[in-house]
Image 1: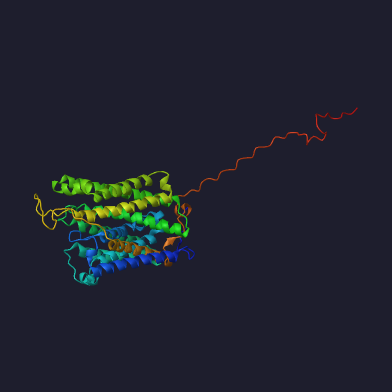
Image 2: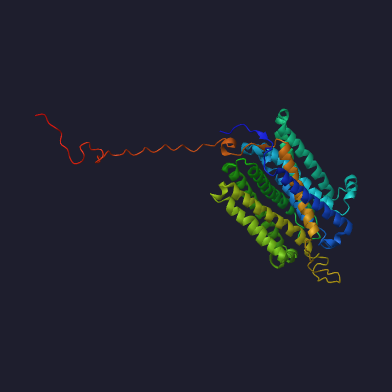
Length: 437
């Protein structure tokens, strides 16, 4: 029978806490220095051009933003769908969601080129632009999740948890729909122009968010020496496996739909066959390492019970998801614009050819700093707020847990008594009893 859930901060005796926090702060500082270098020297020091205008920082930013939506999975499943086994993870789920979103938005702001003019975009909305919609969706999402956390952590407000949880669940769907629609509404790009981008990004957010959530949660519990039961590992792993399959389904729908239309045959051949590094990223990292291998691990009857294997599968999903976003954003821009359908276009500006792009060090450092910002916020939160359960052991969180039956000790075999010369008081040999005369 499950015990009452006790939330607490991680122990003061957790080894290397300030060392980890210092390392994350150093990564953030290096990322800020990279952003300053790009701001002062200009974007010519990056791999971006007037053809590849969204570079590696945008890949990191989109990864963190859609993972922020999916990190709320545990809280939504517990509050909205009534799965009590996920209740110990609800608070951490909400905090992690806000942290990932702030990390992703930090990268976007620093990569704009003029972050000081962000206030202009916030005060002068163009509601015909999907980007203006997303500013509202992102900021409102943080407010909704913060209110959701308040409902979960304040006992007097507990009765509103399900209602606010439903609002948060619907808002996260709207958030990822808006992010996917950024690409789906770009009709000029052959790789983007598809209505399936919105549900694809929703599925990607659920999968990537679950993978990042598992990675960070299990890493913190291992770091602090708290137990992780096979039940929660199996449940989270099975859910992640289902979400991976959903993403694969929408990826198949996206490419099969494009292959059905003759106008998209060129971009599909580029991504699937002739794209070089983009083709390798799609088949090797996204499909095989990021989907097929994790599915095998997560649905293997023995591997799925081990939290280490579930954690490894989640790491592979993260790698595959990053590759998928890279192919969508960078590969989609690398393919030339179809300015005159049915005609070949050539010019001195390399129009009609595949755009070259190589990520630069400042771009990578800026992207990594966004992840470091999110992890630093999570590291501070678990130290100062009671958001983690004391244990994830099976006996403490699973209401259907049955302890294994105790084995009865086997009876010891009785030793057979044998006479030995030492035991014979007659000094050896067969002695006859004295009989009375």
